[in-house]
Image 1: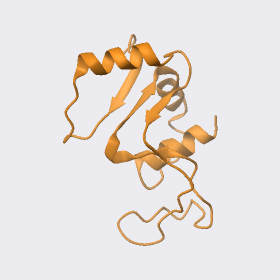
Image 2: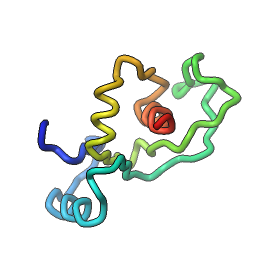
Image 3: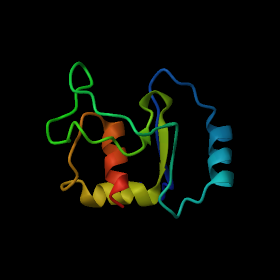
Length: 108
């Protein structure tokens, strides 16, 4: 997508008014800087058991950096998409894509 300025991740149980959404994003945010638009979870501890158990490579004593709340969906600007695409082979996949994105962005 060579001209896309934003990437949107939304669950399949959401309804989006595309025109209003696009107008809000383009009027409110700068697409040329790394931008994550989402509800965020901060200072969360990794799960050590159960469905959301974190992989052993992430220290269980360490708190997560802020990461997007998956149930809300999120929007990222092109610079973030390019960063992830460029470094995808070096970026580790943690327990979920939302926590992974937060960890990756904390390294910028």
